[in-house]
Image (cartoon, rainbow, N blue to C red; front, side):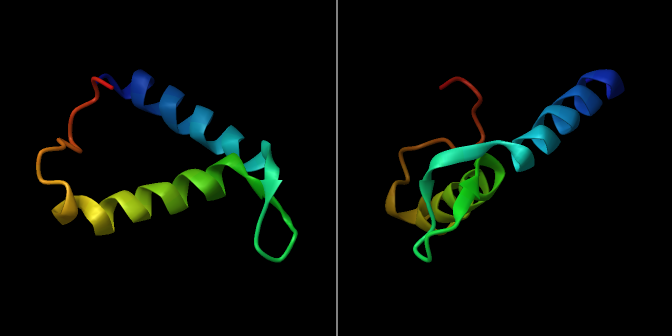
Length: 61
């Protein structure tokens, strides 16, 4: 990956912090897309051993 491509991805990801979802947290606060993505990524990391057939390193979804 070229440095400029990496920076474009990081810049795009930063914008997700300011993009709210239509759902709320368990305490009723509006959740950002970045917060939701972080939680889903964490869940995938912890559950990877439950689904050994999945390739979490592949970008072809």
